[in-house]
Image (cartoon, rainbow, N blue to C red; front, side, top):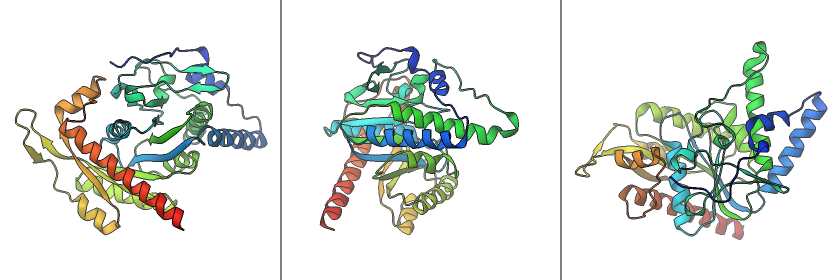
Length: 314
């Protein structure tokens, strides 16, 4: 397990404290507080060169695994990387990086994200929770769906406004799964100057149908789709290394129809997945699955470099 350095849990670093900071006595104060938080988030992120969200149309496709490994791949490319895990109800990035139980450091300037493997700065809602404790929300039952969504977004906004990232080349944000019309656009709206989104799917017909809706919705919101990652494209035998298709879908054809790059395919490797489940991320670039993610990260990096050149010429 990775052991974070110079981190300590403080009374100000838990979820209860954030909730206590949210006071809404009238509409004017709500608008003012949200405006102040939004300005603070913009200020906190002004030193980040590129901000990329990783999203999926449905859960269970390996979105968080992809986010973690793209962050590691970029760090191996000597990029300064931050990783933002904003799945408030099911954060799992710290587990994959061996950072469960790591605390946050609060300074007069704000909260400092702990540093993980390869120097990646990690901010996760999991750091605000007790280990293995579920998130329980309380509110008026007759307004519970509305209240719940508002409270979750306010907690995330407050969390982001406190976070001091410093200078980074990349910030990858692992969004909650789903194509619903609530959290994804709101979360994306919290991240200023977004470079684009990477979409994770599997080659199954069900996942393909859902992810197309997610892509269409993101594009309607003006979000640039940088490309698609096909996860679990095949099953890699842990004994002989032979790869066998798991599904009969065709992500490549879907990407061609939508005019979106297929950044790469990643097979399901049981041994690879097990190491991350145990909090022992594979850092060796020679691993065949790591090499797949490395290639995907290079393609994304090259694409963003190309877009930057075009923007400079316009």
